Image (cartoon, rainbow over all chains, first blue to last red; front, side):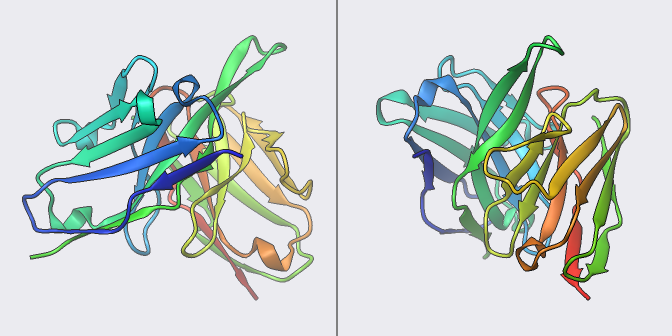
Length: 127
Length: 107
């Protein structure tokens, strides 16, 4: 069965960096994108960016450009999200999510969605 | 960037009620919309994609409709396990965004 298992909770000081991992199993890691989504306590979902594990290509939300880096190690089917210059507002649960696509013949188009999610990693930024 | 709004932000309903949540996009997104359910302390769960396609394993009481800028998620008969927060997400481009969420609570 498809699983995304994330690394454990982190506590960081302002200005530091954090790197969260997401280990995939139950499917071919390089065949699906990995997306990162975060959620501050009591707040909504915020999409951060995507990565294609096959090519390494990435796309980041404008808000995180210059501060986020998404990478992968295909030999261990693991994706990483590193966020730098942390501030208190970055305190949140960070999720990885698999990006899948389905082709609809009658629409002649591919439609994407996030079908499997990791369990979430709490990152706390505090002095 | 494409912005999404959801209405209502909060709704109180009873078991057996028909519930409808609306999601509006700031510009046309064809049918590139998904709906997720999230319960406290849990990761979101995909319910519907391509605006109206039910994800495998999701009960048929959930349905989605719409295209362009206006979309709806309907729960035909609310069950106890459906009390949760619901989010829409646009996937029209590779700059995905989520709506602010609708919390469905027990009346």
